[in-house]
Length: 292
Image (cartoon, rainbow, N blue to C red; front, side, top):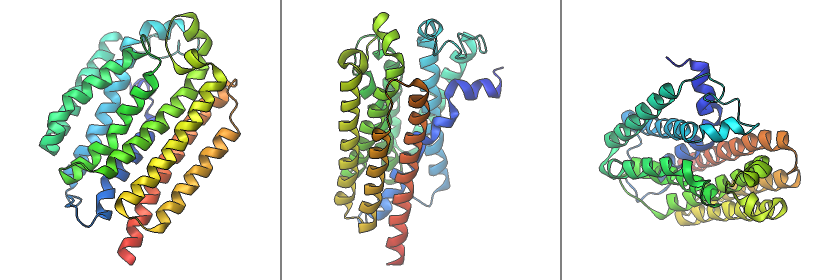
């Protein structure tokens, strides 16, 4: 039996806030659209949505640990992960991957036919992502795509439909995750280049990778603005997005791309703050709608 502390370390549980806040924001967002029927008062649907998100995250992290175990063992930065360090056995991690995969498909199937149909393809994409750094520098965008599908699925879970607004929110998350993952990959630039692994930093170098990350974060802000326009949201929404833009500008102004400790801490801090801000902004806009 895997210990709880080992499980938390394997799935990096503290990072869950990155995507969960966006998923919850997208699940609440249909309430701002008077023309959309929303199943917001069904506790079972909310529980299934959160269960699906958590199961997908656990499955993805377990897949990565299994597939990358030899790479992790050889990389000084990752040699203390649960498989190289011996904290967990390969069988234990495979069992976690299998159970979480079944949990994800089951949770999706309990929500509606859209997610039931989509869940095997989403799971396949999560699995394939673990191999992408072996053959393409676009691996960061595959990670972003997986994350970006979260808001689309959350909207579908609450409305039994798909619309432009969650696609735009998913695009914003895709760009944000890809931008931060490119910066995060700077830590492994020398190792990846020496061992034939692919990433944007290996392909473009340090300075151009940072520039691309800035462009992607600009696209994040633009996509979030378009979410507001697509739903004709209250003006306070746009003020909140300007605040997120300010946070990202500050992050890039203080970026130290050669300082691995700074990159590691900043990765968690910025992703968490942006996600929390998005959720807060959506809740605030809905509150304004109720009061007005």
